[in-house]
Image 1: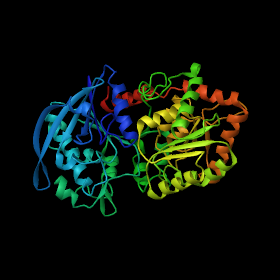
Image 2 (image 1 turned 90 degrees about the vertical axis):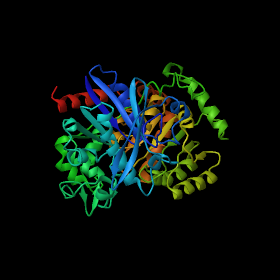
Image 3 (image 1 turned 45 degrees about the horizontal axis):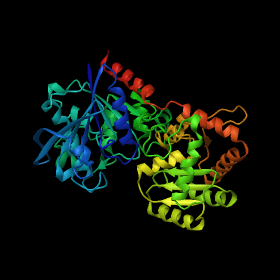
Image 4 (image 1 turned 30 degrees about the horizontal axis):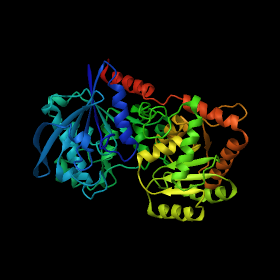
Length: 481
């Protein structure tokens, strides 16, 4: 049996800020069903953020000290089993006993500590993985450490590393003094062929250079990040390492996200009982003080940022709402100026627009189960899960053709009656407004075609089964078995 350890900064159901948390829950849960694999996960122990129901299940496994710069620092290891997957949690209140996951002045030290603690933990818990799958910049420096600081430890020398990039924009860039003050390593790899980024240390670049394989979360994104437009100044590094780069489309947990069994929605349904979706719609409209209506309902479940295309949505929605009897519900938090602009827009269209500046997963599920369309106009999108969740609930996606959105949504063609959503290529408010008008027209004037899209969406398979097999194939290739 081959041992696989996932290392990440967050994971559902313990903590989540984005798609990374969903993936770290769902992919290992699928992989562990493979009898060839022993799959485990290591996360930080954010003491104040873990739900109480899991706090009570934790067992103290071991504790020790590691060297962080010039000081000895405590490492506790807690554990529990969920969905047949064993989780380890790295405990240190100084680093992780805070009110949030990220965004602190000492994040470099916090996640530098986390990465060294993971490596030092392996022999102490008697679990040396054959494959260590790291995720994003928070764990990306582990391959560098294995080849530098810990290269002398024979027990660790055969570990294969896989770096999964969920969003290239976030890289973990720090002053070179971190090599002394945290890692206690020299500068033999502080060069262009290593982890040097201009005059800084770049965790993610180090992972790309030193990992045995690099994956991204969709085939299109794997190609896009090798171009200057999407490469975030690492496109050259990625082109050099393209021989070990692959893109596997993310999936969703189809048990957790099932309109027939989801306990967070008021009326459960499948395509045969799709009329119940209208009941969810009417109850949501009533709860938000919107007129109860069968006119098309559009939703946005997103961070309110320019990367997510919220600026072009603001430019398109006024004309659209003036022109049509449509409603729109927005849920999310983000850039303050965009939050204020959406609030102003709500004041202008009080009977058509409801803006909810918060993060609320239960409310998001109620939106999926009620809406007719979900908008994802992202400037770039490594994978995207909202479109898959929308389709699962019979909510037709409207997307910008980029990254995982392109890979998961087939453009609607009314002449051949094919496709699973509406998409646009040119990233502009005008183009988005045009596709909104087309979706509205299709819903109102060609209901049979609209129902066909809904049927194809609900029948689509976005489970992890297909992608998990791609990961298993990669593990076999890495391990020569």
